Length: 220
Ligand code: SAH
Image 1 (spheres, helix red, strand yellow):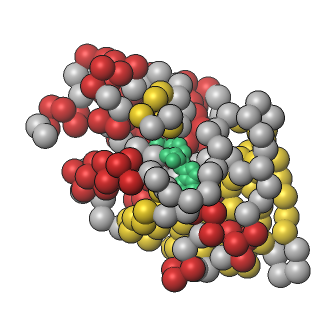
Image 2: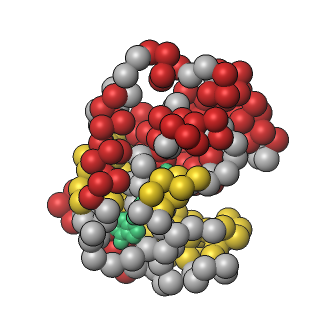
Image 3: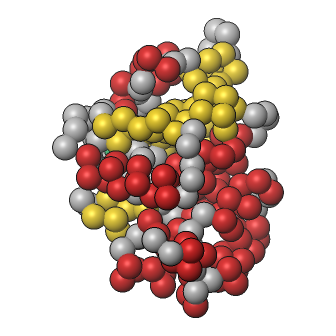
């Protein structure tokens, strides 16, 4: 892939990306490191070429297999909410999808583990991250509902698909003081929740209504 394809031209140019960043600022995203990632990650390489010109609109787009690339605002909001309160060493992402959220988050943490249940999406994500020179991510094809025990406990867990109820395994794999960002609920009624694990309890904060694809069991 050429440098030009990564840096973008026209509707994928730096100026177009700046407009997206400005819009996210206006919507309340204030973490500068997160905004810098949104500016620097070429979202257009994560979608089909035919959709490239829409890559910097603040909207979800199809990535095949009935899945979508998350809306930039949501990626920024979740990343910001995950990082709030300190740096993170060991982070788990459930639902790699096309790898866009992974690419935004990876350089902001020490190690990122990312699980996806649809194999072709995972291998494409892997390729794109390699192309962007991001090397602190380990991928796994599997069911993220059960977490990734071998690398637990995590300082942070980000779930990019919505379960109906909180998956207990993910809570068990969270460090004390660790944060879990997850959209919960049926289609049309989901809420983005941040859980913080305390010694004896789980703290719960609602971050508002969202629309995610469902978190499914098994692999494909
Ligand atoms: N943040 C991603 C979008 C993810 S869409 C991006 O930027 O592209 C949600 C993804 O979660 C889909 O790819 C879907 O296949 C995956 N998914 C759903 N249930 C899962 C599960 N149990 N384990 C792992 N991945 C899952």
